[in-house]
Length: 271
Image (cartoon, rainbow, N blue to C red; front, top):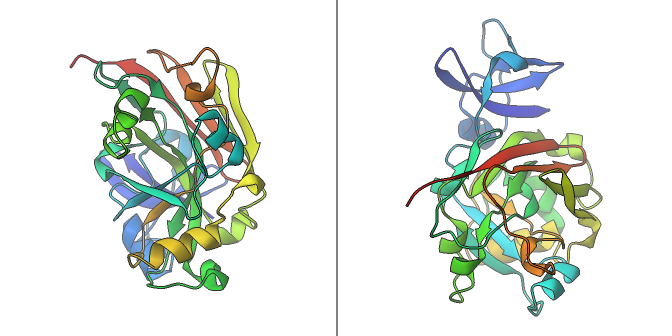
């Protein structure tokens, strides 16, 4: 099942996509996730082509980013893989939706792309055992962990360099866990300005989703709607020779098998 948040005739609501149509839900996305039921509202469906897609989750409780979770990406970043997951937070104010601009202000120096599989938590819990991970996953979506490397790597704290407005493209929808199946066997790629720059498979994750859920929940209780972005594969601009940063007026398209494609275009803005 594919769940979206969309605008139609000036009204934002959650819906289910089926065969090119969107059927409105009774509740908003976060309440739908927390309630564990997708209840269709009365009223006519609308064509998917007639709506504007928003981020599927407009204001998730938290966005947990995972760094250095593919061996080759850690190597290209010249960083060491740690014994536990490298976890950072992205501000929810940085979220943007499919087909929406990625704004590049001058202070966001060395802007980079990061294609990532994102996990949407469906049930809250504390000290969750890795073996029970499937009980807590609602579904999956695509996240572009856009990063201003000049800001991110100026200190050991990564949050601000990854939290400029629009630096978290999310979408185009949430695909429920039952439809995705094994999340550790998905092809993932990122194409920038028509050139494939990342191409990998989630089987190469160092810390897999069960381990991430167990580790994060051992420290802070997970909440319905939390997002865990599982990390990016190799091929980012930082690790290329010469380094390849995002430029204005470039299309960035991330595709993940069984989920779909997330497309955004970079736009220069003044300070």
